[in-house]
Image (spheres, rainbow, N blue to C red):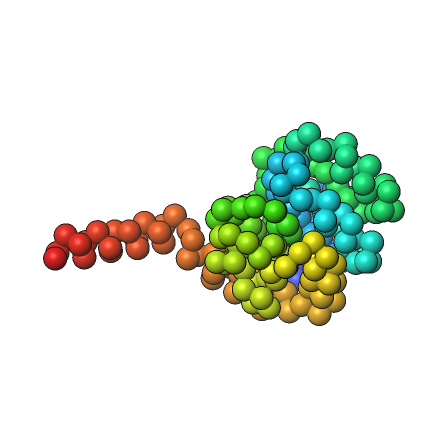
Length: 205
């Protein structure tokens, strides 16, 4: 591993830790520190729709796509990356136990599922400060707010434009703060407090 150099810009120990992990994991996966890294987490199946991001990479120069998970489409997705000339920019990691570290390593969370409920994986990405680019469906629209916590896509064709805009013009620092704050509304602790308050009000009536 190359020598780690940290420039402290505030945020305390956890901030410094995330910087160190970011460099370590990028080196492990052969990614550069300046690469724009998009990550998806989920089973490799048709519903998760990973192919959309692979196809979009051709129009988003220098972006890298990390897919965490396993499934029966592994080989098909690898072949698709070769067909679109982006095999050197697509990394399928298989099953991992260091998901949180991989989120810290990344810049954007892609969530192109065709059908989805709440979308726990995307919320985990947001809790790590990643803007989410996902389909305008189901529970996704409950936490993805255009231009604030990410972007909603009406169809598969929107992903090229949204990824390119996020990479080239997105205010990732501002969006990171908004993502973390939004994700807190869906945390177990927050939900428990809300439920406790609701039940206390019912009991007092």
